[in-house]
Amino acid sequence: MKIKPEIFLLKNEDINYNKILICGLDEGFINFVSEYVINYFVKKNYFIERSGFKKEGLIGDLFSDKKILYVLGDYSEKKNELKNTDELPETVLISSLNNKNINKLKAQFSRSEKNLVLECYPLNRKSKEVVLRNYIETNGLGFSSDVFWYILENLDNEYVLFVKKLEMLSLYSKNIKNIADVENAITIESKIDISKIFFQIFKKNNILIKVFNKNIFSQSDLYMLINNIKNHLNIISTSSNTPEALEKFPKYLFNEKDVFIKIFNSLDKYKINMLYKSILRAEVLTRKNSDLFSVIGLRFLLNIKKIITS
Image (cartoon, rainbow, N blue to C red; front, top):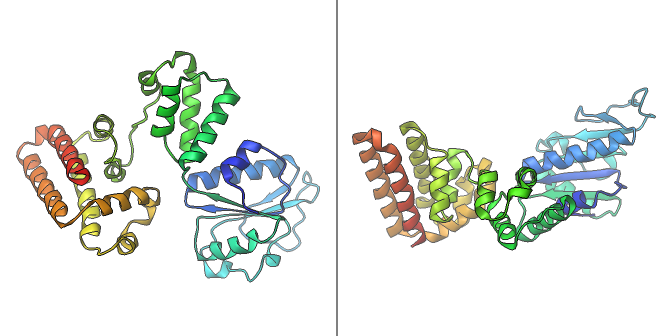
């Protein structure tokens, strides 16, 4: 059986499944749901075996009534491949990012109502709204309509980060009357990995400016940003179609894949040439006027946004 993990968490019901598969692409969400499940079984007096494989003859400990939950991790290696779920321990939690072995196991798990599959991905708009409405209702928060839709549009799509931001907002709920109060209560455009700034390119200019100012503090930071954009542009310029570009796209940036595809589809040879010229100009100006790196960098970022979105 498949259940959306955010719905599974919201229901907070008894777990009546002995074989549970938690997979997907949002690693933080996978870990969060896994710990939730493990804590449930701990409260049910299970012994938690985290070694990653079944141990013959293991009978729990003095406090577990001999009940065991096996927690199996990475299923990317061939040695972990199973012919069928009967080879698994009686009570097992498998937690892993998607891979070929997991996809095979997912198909087997989904065929039985006795098994549970929880696929963890960044929240889509509908799921995000469900989580937000539930959090507001559960915590008695009185947000205005403008604040509600602003939170929905601007907070992280990753479940764990989204809920953490909501927790921060709840601490200041009495003082949040408008959008400005939200921005003051939490830093929506907080410091992020410089490698991900490029994927903010479709945000409004005021948001893009905040992202830049909160992440680029030195000439070295600016060079890192420029080189990162050059690397992504190189992938785009040397790929004839989307699947080819995605093959070259860094795996660790899987959460940015949709934005990358949007950027890829927005560019043609003329725009790519314009972007390379903008990069060269920014590099030359920064070398000649190192003290003005912040002004040069911000103009550069806004200029490439203009090229991409034109």
